Image (cartoon, rainbow, N blue to C red; front, side, top):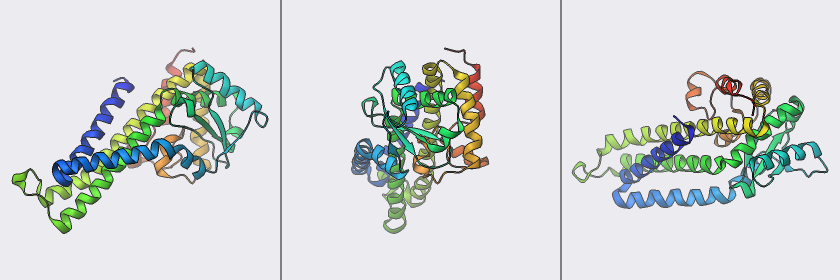
Length: 282
């Protein structure tokens, strides 16, 4: 299935979860409460998420005089993508990684760590920057922020429903309620389902950004080689990253395997590399 179609379907699924949890919480009134909570959280995220994440990781903006080659690459790639040149930030630390943020292409930001600047050669770094500009061009930051916010709203409502079921009972079954036991079960299942959907959306957008990065850099192999190096780099030098922002990075900054892969915000590195190497040079 096309990743764009998959994103739409997954966002629709999150919406269903949100509405259902609102209805479970309090019928029509609960649905209104759910909508208001989601609206408020999305408003806050839309306007302030980029500032928060840059401050969280101590990112500092650099000008063209300080890093002319980095700025030249960003300018060329953003021109190729047909978007305004993003601002450029450096994140202190040895972990090799990068992310993009900003609520729209006009307010885009590309941030790279000191570690990635040391690890990658210029061709590989160009592939990474093209990937991040692909995120900005595709408005992935907005899509992923909405998905994360809606999943967060589902979790908040599930907590309220769970507490209400334990201490206040629930609506009668004949009024359309699930009963206390049913409410508790759904209050546990719904957040897990919402989280899985959010992760699936993030993985779909990563594939699209890889495709865009290959197209803008005209060199899929450079991005594939960069991902190979980064996969080892983040394992060798782990980052003290928040799970809430893990989806923003080009490679998952959180380590883990097995069952944790189900909850990963990123597709398997091996799959991403294989897809890139199957592409023709643009």
